[in-house]
Length: 259
Image (cartoon, rainbow, N blue to C red; front, side, top):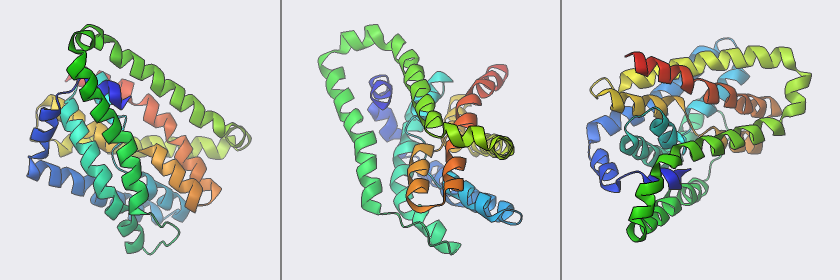
């Protein structure tokens, strides 16, 4: 997915966006520290396990698919890529720091594991896409209109695979699953709101990028970490995030169109 997004993106625009230090500092502080802590302390007052799960989700960096989602909604792809790269690096420090701060010791994240993940998911598609663009620019220009559609198909397959892996639990505990899913929708809607207003100084395309980066976190990484370090109930909660993650983009796109 990122390979196709990089094919449509001018890397120099990504570097230019990184030089907006005030915006990057504000967005990163809000998304990686302030929002996770707000959600945790509010939810922890009535459900500790749920609070831990939401903390895990909201402490994740922006999803590697968020540039593709930004492309679908016609936002600033370069800014979205910039936020993905920076939050993925910052997460190596902020994720363990947050869990240490609230004295939850179940999660010990290796910075090297996250850096390896970042390299595989970001650097390889970035480099290979630029090589392809250099040697086949005409083919890329001719086929670029297909890239977004292909990414939608890939994303659908990913969702089907993750949800299918927890099929039995979802069916057998349907009542609990329903209320957790409803709660996750509320969390995701609030993340959309926070993300949209975090880009208050930007144009509409910039606001789309900050919204996507805030609402669409790397829940794939959250699922892996939950499976490694937490009890099954939190793993299920992370899997359920796939539902609002993949259904709220359509109403958000409609909202943007009416703006």
